[in-house]
Length: 291
Image 1 (tube, rainbow, N blue to C red):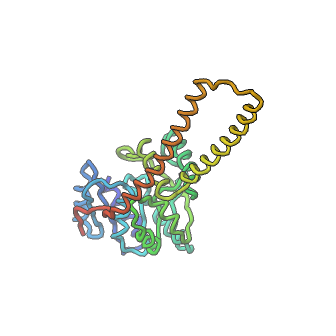
Image 2 (cartoon, rainbow, N blue to C red):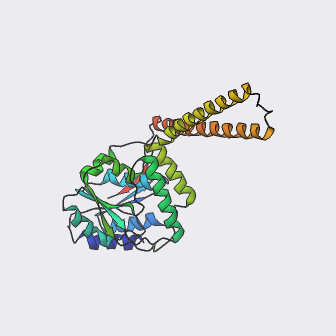
Image 3 (cartoon, rainbow, N blue to C red):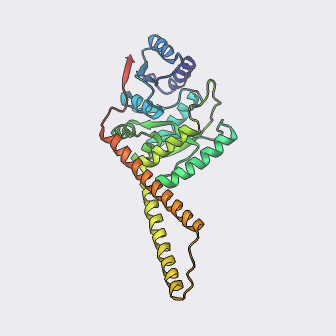
Protein backbone atom coordinates (compact mmCIF):
# COMPACT_ATOMS: atom_id res chain seq x y z
CA UNK A 1 0.00 0.00 0.00
CA UNK A 2 2.89 2.38 0.75
CA UNK A 3 4.25 2.03 -2.80
CA UNK A 4 0.88 2.79 -4.35
CA UNK A 5 0.29 5.69 -1.95
CA UNK A 6 3.61 7.37 -2.80
CA UNK A 7 3.10 6.77 -6.52
CA UNK A 8 -0.36 8.34 -6.51
CA UNK A 9 0.73 11.32 -4.37
CA UNK A 10 3.63 12.10 -6.72
CA UNK A 11 1.40 11.70 -9.76
CA UNK A 12 -1.13 14.22 -8.46
CA UNK A 13 1.10 16.71 -6.62
CA UNK A 14 3.33 17.17 -9.70
CA UNK A 15 0.25 18.60 -11.43
CA UNK A 16 0.61 21.53 -9.01
CA UNK A 17 4.38 21.84 -8.43
CA UNK A 18 7.70 19.99 -8.64
CA UNK A 19 8.77 21.43 -5.30
CA UNK A 20 7.25 19.17 -2.65
CA UNK A 21 8.02 16.63 0.06
CA UNK A 22 6.19 13.52 1.24
CA UNK A 23 6.44 12.76 4.96
CA UNK A 24 5.50 9.22 5.97
CA UNK A 25 5.15 8.59 9.72
CA UNK A 26 5.29 4.99 10.94
CA UNK A 27 3.45 4.81 14.27
CA UNK A 28 4.45 1.41 15.63
CA UNK A 29 2.77 -0.53 12.83
CA UNK A 30 2.85 -4.34 13.30
CA UNK A 31 3.34 -5.02 9.56
CA UNK A 32 6.31 -4.26 7.27
CA UNK A 33 5.33 -0.63 6.64
CA UNK A 34 8.70 0.75 7.78
CA UNK A 35 10.61 -1.45 5.33
CA UNK A 36 8.40 -0.12 2.53
CA UNK A 37 8.97 3.45 3.71
CA UNK A 38 12.75 2.89 3.72
CA UNK A 39 12.63 1.55 0.17
CA UNK A 40 10.66 4.57 -1.07
CA UNK A 41 13.02 6.96 0.73
CA UNK A 42 15.98 5.35 -1.05
CA UNK A 43 14.28 5.65 -4.44
CA UNK A 44 13.19 9.27 -4.03
CA UNK A 45 14.81 11.92 -1.80
CA UNK A 46 11.53 13.85 -1.74
CA UNK A 47 10.11 11.05 0.42
CA UNK A 48 10.96 11.41 4.11
CA UNK A 49 10.38 8.65 6.64
CA UNK A 50 9.88 9.02 10.40
CA UNK A 51 9.61 6.00 12.68
CA UNK A 52 8.25 6.57 16.18
CA UNK A 53 9.63 4.60 19.11
CA UNK A 54 6.22 2.97 19.70
CA UNK A 55 2.54 3.39 18.88
CA UNK A 56 1.52 6.84 20.17
CA UNK A 57 -1.77 7.13 18.26
CA UNK A 58 -3.00 8.69 15.03
CA UNK A 59 -3.13 12.31 16.15
CA UNK A 60 0.34 12.15 17.70
CA UNK A 61 1.68 10.72 14.44
CA UNK A 62 0.03 13.62 12.60
CA UNK A 63 1.72 16.07 15.00
CA UNK A 64 5.08 14.42 14.25
CA UNK A 65 4.62 14.96 10.52
CA UNK A 66 3.44 18.54 10.97
CA UNK A 67 6.43 19.40 13.18
CA UNK A 68 8.74 18.37 10.32
CA UNK A 69 6.74 19.83 7.39
CA UNK A 70 8.30 22.80 5.60
CA UNK A 71 5.91 23.59 2.73
CA UNK A 72 3.67 26.62 2.32
CA UNK A 73 0.71 24.29 1.83
CA UNK A 74 0.45 21.05 3.78
CA UNK A 75 -1.88 18.13 3.04
CA UNK A 76 -2.80 15.76 5.89
CA UNK A 77 -4.16 12.37 4.87
CA UNK A 78 -4.41 8.76 6.01
CA UNK A 79 -2.31 6.06 4.38
CA UNK A 80 -5.12 3.57 3.61
CA UNK A 81 -6.01 5.30 0.30
CA UNK A 82 -9.55 6.01 1.46
CA UNK A 83 -8.34 9.61 1.28
CA UNK A 84 -7.76 9.79 -2.49
CA UNK A 85 -4.57 11.59 -3.63
CA UNK A 86 -6.51 12.50 -6.79
CA UNK A 87 -8.39 15.07 -4.68
CA UNK A 88 -5.24 17.02 -3.73
CA UNK A 89 -5.26 19.28 -6.85
CA UNK A 90 -8.95 20.06 -6.24
CA UNK A 91 -8.27 20.97 -2.60
CA UNK A 92 -5.36 23.21 -3.65
CA UNK A 93 -7.45 24.89 -6.34
CA UNK A 94 -10.18 25.65 -3.79
CA UNK A 95 -7.59 27.06 -1.37
CA UNK A 96 -6.50 29.57 -4.04
CA UNK A 97 -9.90 31.24 -3.67
CA UNK A 98 -8.61 32.81 -0.44
CA UNK A 99 -8.99 30.04 2.13
CA UNK A 100 -6.38 28.94 4.68
CA UNK A 101 -8.00 25.56 5.31
CA UNK A 102 -9.93 23.37 2.87
CA UNK A 103 -11.36 20.27 4.53
CA UNK A 104 -12.29 17.24 2.47
CA UNK A 105 -15.98 16.43 2.97
CA UNK A 106 -16.73 12.78 2.19
CA UNK A 107 -20.00 12.69 0.25
CA UNK A 108 -20.10 8.90 -0.20
CA UNK A 109 -18.52 7.38 2.91
CA UNK A 110 -17.44 3.81 2.23
CA UNK A 111 -18.39 2.50 5.67
CA UNK A 112 -21.07 0.08 6.78
CA UNK A 113 -24.51 1.25 7.94
CA UNK A 114 -23.89 0.74 11.66
CA UNK A 115 -20.60 2.66 11.57
CA UNK A 116 -22.33 5.57 9.81
CA UNK A 117 -25.14 5.66 12.41
CA UNK A 118 -22.71 5.42 15.32
CA UNK A 119 -20.51 8.11 13.77
CA UNK A 120 -23.51 10.42 13.36
CA UNK A 121 -24.59 10.02 17.01
CA UNK A 122 -20.97 10.24 18.19
CA UNK A 123 -20.39 13.61 16.51
CA UNK A 124 -23.79 15.00 17.58
CA UNK A 125 -23.07 14.31 21.25
CA UNK A 126 -19.49 15.52 20.82
CA UNK A 127 -20.66 18.79 19.25
CA UNK A 128 -22.98 19.42 22.20
CA UNK A 129 -20.42 18.62 24.91
CA UNK A 130 -17.52 20.52 23.31
CA UNK A 131 -19.57 23.46 22.03
CA UNK A 132 -18.08 23.04 18.54
CA UNK A 133 -19.58 21.92 15.22
CA UNK A 134 -18.21 18.45 14.54
CA UNK A 135 -19.04 17.12 11.07
CA UNK A 136 -19.00 13.29 10.70
CA UNK A 137 -18.25 13.67 6.97
CA UNK A 138 -14.98 15.51 7.74
CA UNK A 139 -11.86 13.95 9.27
CA UNK A 140 -8.16 14.85 8.95
CA UNK A 141 -7.92 14.96 5.14
CA UNK A 142 -7.52 18.48 3.87
CA UNK A 143 -5.06 21.15 2.80
CA UNK A 144 -3.75 23.65 5.34
CA UNK A 145 -1.70 26.83 4.99
CA UNK A 146 1.62 26.90 6.82
CA UNK A 147 0.39 29.55 9.29
CA UNK A 148 -2.49 27.27 10.33
CA UNK A 149 -0.12 24.36 10.93
CA UNK A 150 2.27 26.60 12.88
CA UNK A 151 -0.62 27.68 15.11
CA UNK A 152 -1.67 24.05 15.69
CA UNK A 153 1.92 23.02 16.46
CA UNK A 154 2.16 25.73 19.11
CA UNK A 155 -0.52 23.85 21.04
CA UNK A 156 1.59 21.33 22.97
CA UNK A 157 -1.07 19.84 25.24
CA UNK A 158 -0.81 16.13 25.90
CA UNK A 159 -4.28 15.28 24.53
CA UNK A 160 -4.20 15.97 20.79
CA UNK A 161 -7.21 15.77 18.48
CA UNK A 162 -6.20 17.34 15.16
CA UNK A 163 -9.65 18.33 13.74
CA UNK A 164 -10.69 19.96 17.04
CA UNK A 165 -7.39 21.86 17.22
CA UNK A 166 -7.83 23.09 13.64
CA UNK A 167 -11.30 24.38 14.51
CA UNK A 168 -9.95 26.14 17.59
CA UNK A 169 -7.18 28.07 15.77
CA UNK A 170 -9.72 29.43 13.29
CA UNK A 171 -8.54 31.22 10.11
CA UNK A 172 -10.54 31.12 6.86
CA UNK A 173 -11.95 27.60 6.54
CA UNK A 174 -14.21 25.87 4.03
CA UNK A 175 -15.16 22.38 2.89
CA UNK A 176 -14.99 20.66 -0.47
CA UNK A 177 -16.93 17.53 -1.38
CA UNK A 178 -14.65 14.66 -2.38
CA UNK A 179 -15.05 11.00 -3.23
CA UNK A 180 -14.30 8.56 -0.42
CA UNK A 181 -12.65 5.33 -1.55
CA UNK A 182 -13.16 1.89 -0.05
CA UNK A 183 -10.34 0.64 2.16
CA UNK A 184 -7.94 -1.40 0.02
CA UNK A 185 -6.18 -3.37 2.76
CA UNK A 186 -6.71 -4.24 6.42
CA UNK A 187 -9.39 -2.80 8.66
CA UNK A 188 -9.77 0.35 10.73
CA UNK A 189 -8.19 0.30 14.20
CA UNK A 190 -11.02 2.52 15.48
CA UNK A 191 -13.40 0.06 17.12
CA UNK A 192 -16.23 1.05 19.50
CA UNK A 193 -13.99 1.00 22.59
CA UNK A 194 -11.31 3.15 20.98
CA UNK A 195 -13.87 5.67 19.69
CA UNK A 196 -15.36 5.86 23.18
CA UNK A 197 -11.93 6.57 24.69
CA UNK A 198 -11.29 9.16 21.97
CA UNK A 199 -14.59 10.89 22.75
CA UNK A 200 -13.76 10.93 26.47
CA UNK A 201 -10.34 12.46 25.75
CA UNK A 202 -11.89 15.17 23.56
CA UNK A 203 -14.54 16.05 26.13
CA UNK A 204 -12.06 16.21 29.02
CA UNK A 205 -9.46 18.15 27.03
CA UNK A 206 -11.70 20.67 25.29
CA UNK A 207 -14.82 21.05 27.43
CA UNK A 208 -15.88 21.76 30.99
CA UNK A 209 -19.51 21.02 30.16
CA UNK A 210 -19.63 17.74 32.18
CA UNK A 211 -18.71 19.76 35.28
CA UNK A 212 -21.38 22.32 34.44
CA UNK A 213 -23.95 19.53 33.99
CA UNK A 214 -23.04 18.16 37.44
CA UNK A 215 -23.53 21.62 39.01
CA UNK A 216 -26.93 22.01 37.32
CA UNK A 217 -27.94 18.49 38.35
CA UNK A 218 -26.89 19.21 41.94
CA UNK A 219 -28.91 22.43 42.00
CA UNK A 220 -31.93 20.67 40.53
CA UNK A 221 -31.77 17.87 43.14
CA UNK A 222 -31.35 20.46 45.92
CA UNK A 223 -34.41 22.34 44.65
CA UNK A 224 -36.47 19.12 44.54
CA UNK A 225 -35.25 18.26 48.05
CA UNK A 226 -36.58 21.58 49.39
CA UNK A 227 -39.94 20.92 47.73
CA UNK A 228 -40.15 17.43 49.25
CA UNK A 229 -39.08 18.80 52.65
CA UNK A 230 -41.83 21.43 52.47
CA UNK A 231 -44.40 18.75 51.57
CA UNK A 232 -43.24 16.47 54.41
CA UNK A 233 -43.46 19.35 56.94
CA UNK A 234 -47.05 20.05 55.89
CA UNK A 235 -47.88 16.33 56.13
CA UNK A 236 -46.29 16.22 59.58
CA UNK A 237 -48.46 19.05 60.94
CA UNK A 238 -51.54 17.47 59.34
CA UNK A 239 -50.63 14.11 60.93
CA UNK A 240 -50.38 12.49 57.49
CA UNK A 241 -46.86 11.06 57.92
CA UNK A 242 -46.65 7.29 57.55
CA UNK A 243 -43.67 5.07 58.29
CA UNK A 244 -41.18 5.24 55.40
CA UNK A 245 -40.90 2.03 53.45
CA UNK A 246 -37.72 0.02 53.03
CA UNK A 247 -37.90 0.12 49.21
CA UNK A 248 -38.11 3.90 48.89
CA UNK A 249 -35.30 4.32 51.42
CA UNK A 250 -32.97 1.93 49.58
CA UNK A 251 -33.76 3.46 46.19
CA UNK A 252 -32.88 6.91 47.55
CA UNK A 253 -29.61 5.66 49.07
CA UNK A 254 -28.53 3.86 45.88
CA UNK A 255 -29.53 6.79 43.65
CA UNK A 256 -27.63 9.44 45.59
CA UNK A 257 -24.66 7.11 46.18
CA UNK A 258 -24.43 6.52 42.43
CA UNK A 259 -24.73 10.25 41.76
CA UNK A 260 -21.95 11.04 44.23
CA UNK A 261 -19.69 8.34 42.75
CA UNK A 262 -20.33 9.62 39.22
CA UNK A 263 -19.54 13.18 40.29
CA UNK A 264 -16.32 12.13 42.00
CA UNK A 265 -15.40 10.06 38.94
CA UNK A 266 -15.81 12.98 36.52
CA UNK A 267 -13.87 15.35 38.77
CA UNK A 268 -11.22 12.64 39.19
CA UNK A 269 -10.85 12.29 35.41
CA UNK A 270 -10.24 16.03 35.07
CA UNK A 271 -7.68 15.94 37.88
CA UNK A 272 -6.03 12.93 36.20
CA UNK A 273 -5.73 14.80 32.90
CA UNK A 274 -4.18 17.76 34.73
CA UNK A 275 -1.72 15.34 36.34
CA UNK A 276 -0.80 13.94 32.92
CA UNK A 277 -0.30 17.46 31.59
CA UNK A 278 2.00 18.71 34.36
CA UNK A 279 4.35 15.76 33.82
CA UNK A 280 5.52 17.64 30.72
CA UNK A 281 6.47 14.47 28.86
CA UNK A 282 7.29 14.71 25.13
CA UNK A 283 4.28 14.30 22.84
CA UNK A 284 6.13 11.67 20.80
CA UNK A 285 9.55 10.03 20.56
CA UNK A 286 11.36 9.40 17.27
CA UNK A 287 13.39 6.27 16.67
CA UNK A 288 14.60 6.91 13.10
CA UNK A 289 14.44 9.63 10.45
CA UNK A 290 15.33 9.14 6.78
CA UNK A 291 16.04 12.01 4.31
